[in-house]
Length: 277
Image (cartoon, rainbow, N blue to C red; front, top):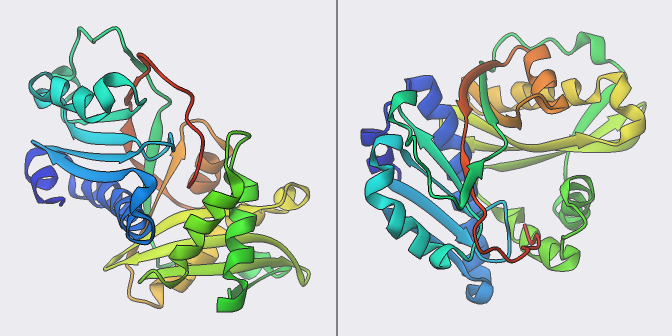
């Protein structure tokens, strides 16, 4: 699925590794959702050098990535794939800035910037986080784990029970590791990472608001680095909105920015999508 993207998108190796690890995780979970429920309207296609994901009712998953220099050639096919422009989608354009189209279809706007970060898994020091402890989530508690995940991340447009049913199918996903986060013995958060060869994809973690001031986010970031190193991962990758608290926590725990995705968002002829992660 990623071979064409890798050949035709001029990213550095670190950028490419971070980008593909995060996208691969989304592809994997969409494939699982689709296998369990073919009626969800999930599709994954390669349109020329572009990788395109589609989940009709879920805004986050409707996204495509490919080289800026080829955008004009495949613009019509991409719009057709996303329902003749009826589905909002994020378009990530890689390559030199000068290759980005200067004249855009009026249905596109500049999207929120997503930043991809990476750092080695070595050199983790959790000594100052003595009040924090972590435990692997038992199989019988996986639904509870995904429930906390959704309560933390999902917005007001989420079909909560449907999203929870979908996420529960990830419980047996190969390479997925889930941790409970405890503060002074009390469960206050969660963390998740996906093992992809030498990379660990940090794909969701959070601490309940009263405990964020106690460096809980940094603690769960470092714990996932420590745990993934035990599985042979030499690097960890993560993505965050530019300027967000998550981005700052990544920087504070030794992550370095490897790619700033200044994407476009198609907003022409839209219907409001709801979240069924």
